[in-house]
View 1 (tube, rainbow, N blue to C red):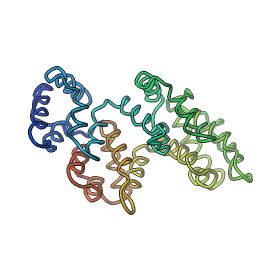
View 2 (tube, rainbow, N blue to C red):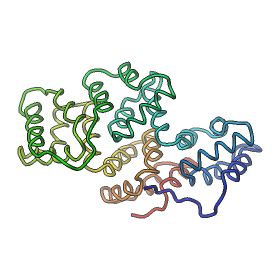
View 3 (cartoon, rainbow, N blue to C red):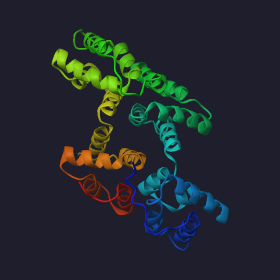
View 4 (cartoon, rainbow, N blue to C red):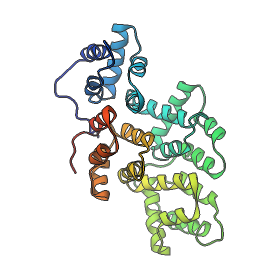
Amino acid sequence: MSSLSLSHVPTSPRDDAIQLYRAFKGFGCDNEAVIKILAHRDAMQRALIQQEYSTMYSTDLLKKLASELRGKLETAVLLWMHEPASRDAIILNESLSPDFLNLEAATELICTRTVPQLQTLKQIYYSKFGTHIERDIELQTTGDHQKILLAYLNAPRYQGAEIDRGLVAEDAKALFKAGEKKLGTNEKIFVRIFSERSPAHLIAVSSAYHDMYGNSLNKAVKSETSGKLELALLSILGCAKNPYKHFAKVLNKAMKGLGTDDTKLIRVIVTRTEIDMQYIKAEYYKKYGKTLNDEVQSETSGHYRTFLLSLLGPNHH
């Protein structure tokens, strides 16, 4: 479900294209007008506006936006203009490019997507960049981190709610033996179970693990693994249990402490707005006692702030 507050005044993509053209004319760009239009249009409307703009002015709207906008506002608006799967492909390609290498972003993106989303992502990535995601992952990552990403990208996980109790107990036991029970960790077992099992199954394993060994699987992952492998496993487990809470945590981390991780803030807000943002906002308030809107308001400024808040929609708990 989307939390876009779509504008009540019905406008056509053609009208929007004309308004944008006007916003670009003259000295400087009317950022407010651009935000007012684009932040309140869904993926289909944004695609139609791009078509109209190109037809009427023989100019690519994305190129025009890139030349008119600046800084973080430019980054956020340009990402927002794409439809979800192609946006994921762009984020991933940039995260895996040597110049902008951001393995945290790549890991988080892959490990929080569903099987159908990953299948579409792989096709779009290839058609956009002429290379397979797997190849780029192999070039930029190593070891168990590489193994979990490749396995998670390609394992045909069951998506339904049914679970096999016997296998759940077996997996819980295997994870205990591979981790807490021994000196050192058998990462291979963690990679296999986390990449091959359904979300419902992982939830059951997590609960069985706690019943059998009195410790949470989350804590076991944290104490037995580290770095990007730990991030991958925690993202997979977090999204299996409660994706909204998972993203609330990621957003909180982006804004906590000194300075704000704007790359992360933009990535999560822009990619979740049309999927599950109001649930993320509810979890955020539940967990941190502050609304996500208020936190974004205090951590950002200017037109960039206006744009993010427009995407987030009304400020309520």
